Length: 151
Image (tube, rainbow, N blue to C red):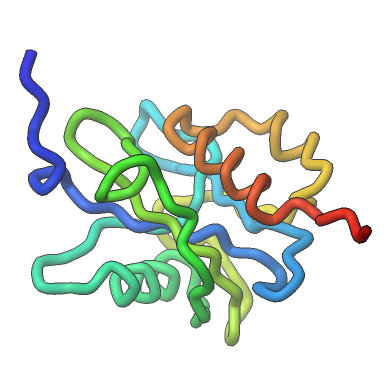
């Protein structure tokens, strides 16, 4: 079986929406309402990049459409491939930290529930039924935002 070259993958963008880019302690997670194979599972909000759109602009648009918020993007949670984190054989997702700058997040599109959960220690996050492709991203996010010991 041959795999498509990375440049032919569908580009998806996602947001790790945190309470503060400077000192993140909580993560906003979204429960999918569709498609059927993912309904009831939790994920990072986001969506497809449209033709001619930059990834960062697509993510800000998706956050407004899906959650009704304006946000500021922070650093990217770099994935293992040139297009970010593999979702399946046809798509990959780039993920950025994001902080809401205006509005209150609501499940407007593709989701039926939102929850703010502690990033660390994160047992509540671990117990959620995540979309499987998002679990490695969650692990990378938690590693990147882990409180550092002061020496």
